[in-house]
Image (cartoon, rainbow, N blue to C red; front, top):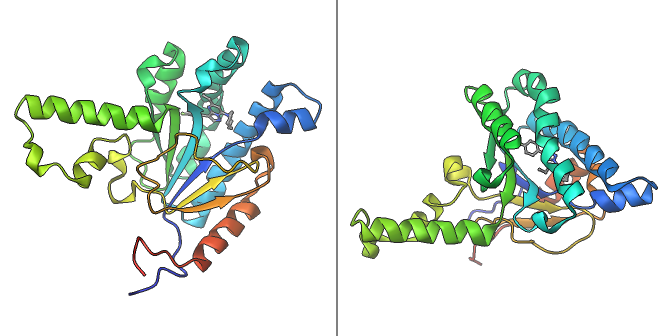
Length: 240
Ligand SMILES: CCc1cc(N2CCCCCC2)n2ncc(-c3ccc(F)cc3)c2n1
């Protein structure tokens, strides 16, 4: 069997964890950590684009994050607005195409509008896809896919005998990524060793890399190190 050793990861997904603890370690409020985290999103986006990454998926807000204190959620919901208000020119200069996946209809109006506008503004770019997971949860994503498949079977648009793994993949929020939908490499920062309801279907054969660095401290060099470790691994995809 041909080895995957040395292959460069096309799709990298990152759970950007540790922003609150980073703020605490710097004796600052949590919001300061979230702001530092957003600044690092800008830095790592440009670095990943220049490394030749084809898709960078970033877990920005989970369906479970609504349980956080109201003032923190309100601050977080402002971050996409701040991000695009300050970064669209650089995204255009980098030829980056923005995609935002999640239950966007549940977002505050202004947050939702700015994400749609960013997707429209960058739609013609054919460089790296910067794919934000915003109000996203994998079990909810899979449940919505099963509900839609059920509707199509009930409407006789879909023969249940033809349902296969591709059918499920095509009904997930990553379907627009096509052959790049499944991450080659998942990175989680801050030392947590959990998937936290992120891309559970898509990560079936992904390599997992855990960094002890808090997200604001996760540098482009750390990303390069994670990629080097990935290239040293020999992926099996279930085989020998
Ligand atoms: C809605 C919560 C949130 C939090 C957040 N943090 C705070 C915690 C995670 C670490 C990164 C910084 N960022 N950083 C960028 C975005 C963003 C999301 C969507 C989008 F289309 C453009 C930008 C972001 N969104």
